[in-house]
Length: 473
Picture 1: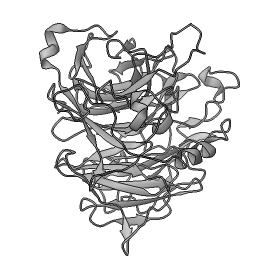
Picture 2 (picture 1 turned 60 degrees about the vertical axis):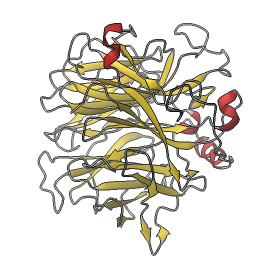
Picture 3 (picture 1 turned 90 degrees about the vertical axis):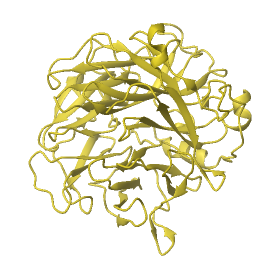
Picture 4 (picture 1 turned 180 degrees about the horizontal axis):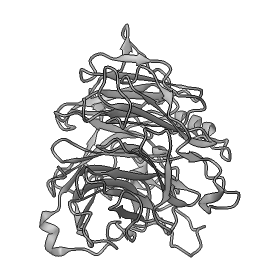
């Protein structure tokens, strides 16, 4: 969910979603040999969407896992996930009564159980405006943090969700919305009882603000100046220069550098902090605009920064900086062959030059840059795309992109952005696992009769991953 000064209907929209009957029924039969609704073989391509037939044999296969508990699908919006060092998967599921459940799989998504924070057998996270889960890859600690707008509460676990410690006041300061929680090595501060600094950034309408915890999530304090101001005359933005506070997922590099990406005043920007958020350097990474507040940014051990965003033409782009954000490469359109429109990008890092990113995308959208945008989307279908590359630092990288769902059984029908995407809402997620496999968190908002052409119905939790292809670690 998001709260914006110009969009007071956000809570109304949320209530409308909750009122839906989340009926979980099967969609159309998939075409792939597995018969499980997966997207099948990915496509090898270069920037600009040019296929590379000679590399097609190296392409991974995109697979889909539906999160069922004892055979019953569970629901989700704004999905996030995390993987532990031994490959256990954790996904935050948003139930229709706003209850949050933490779903867990110990067998690569084949089966699932619930590992939700509980006290006395009762779910501690009984209500949430925004769900969010994060697994610290260094420590295996699982963080589950939920918004109440006025504040937020968080639980963390060090034993794969069997027991949890709950902090009911993890908000930094109100108003809290559209949060991201992430962790990494300290740049200067001594930590207490936990090796990493835990960061929590959020949209407070007027800015993109952050707080940090030096004790593993027990207490939080403001970091300093906001990463982004809500009103930014220096950004060269649109109209009144009100840019809002919505941003992408945060990231901490091995040297403690903090990155927070944002579609800011109609352009892709990145906030960089070398002092744990006390101060920020804001840089515009490209000039071809953005149609989305979401963006992804990661930084490898050598200081190379990778940034993915949606351009003004509503297609995904990648830029790279090899000098810590001072200079940026020419934007490369990294959408799959045939892609017409994309939304909600997110990114994760495997190793130097090895990245994974996800987005929602359509191959039959009526949108064309520079043309009439009032065309009907009633027949438009949207899929969950996953892309990996092992040579992102090259001048002409090779990409492998697949849809986690079979295209005959879409995840969304009708519009999906720019910005909010129906049952998905504001963001999706991707994580590179310990073995180098990319995993993505998605929502299937097109179950039952929707899959055959009717209106959207359903909001099922689904996870995708790529089998084979280049290893990212």
